[in-house]
Image (tube, rainbow, N blue to C red; front, side, top):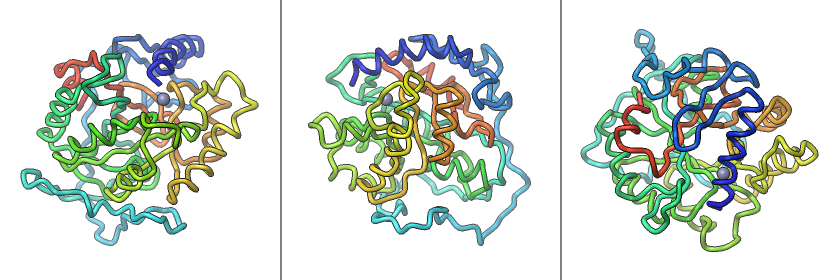
Length: 321
Ligand SMILES: [Zn+2]
């Protein structure tokens, strides 16, 4: 998997540059969204503003309390698992902030992307448990509350109740250390996450989340999305799009017993054809970026801030509004 991702990073850089969509500098933070491929200008941060503090903070509207607003997912099928994160432990040191209704439209909420959290591997995509805990501590100290990615999507598109500082943590590929290493640390802070699974990786060995572990995470309020059937670069062969995109949703919904409404582009790579396919099947598509600002026009290439082994705590703090 690591090899795939490394290779994918190079492909990503090459493909994105060639598409004029973004420039992803390996080892750096210079993903520069452009205006093509459905990435709106509004969603694109100013060039070279990636690691500065210039991201416009989200200023809530004058309090628009809507006590009748429901947090019930818009999906109508009854999930086998309750999405209610009632089983998540509530740390005593984390006050529960009041949620207010966020009207449809732009929202500033960082979406973080991790791959591996462990102390055994030392590759680009593996964050140590110490670094991961320190990063979560920064988020908790800044008052962030994690929300499922589906709630972020709904808030931007339709409006939805949100905590004062919403955050989404995502993991790509469904690596087992997400359960064995990251999950216990997230529990310390009362955080949940969203995981993007590759259908053909499931039940294929001990490096990937087991079905039981996935069930436990679902019961703890975690959410799962599709990361395609085989983790292929979708822009390379359009004849596989239905299989990689649409079929992955059906297969995952069967596997999970829940609705699957979001898709993470393998290697963060997409073009207008791929994006159209994702739009036909999902409610949002997740990519890469450095912006924490999301708009209705960016829902099919949502910017995710990738955290790597090389990300220092100072880098991390600069990336988070
Ligand atoms: Zn991946």
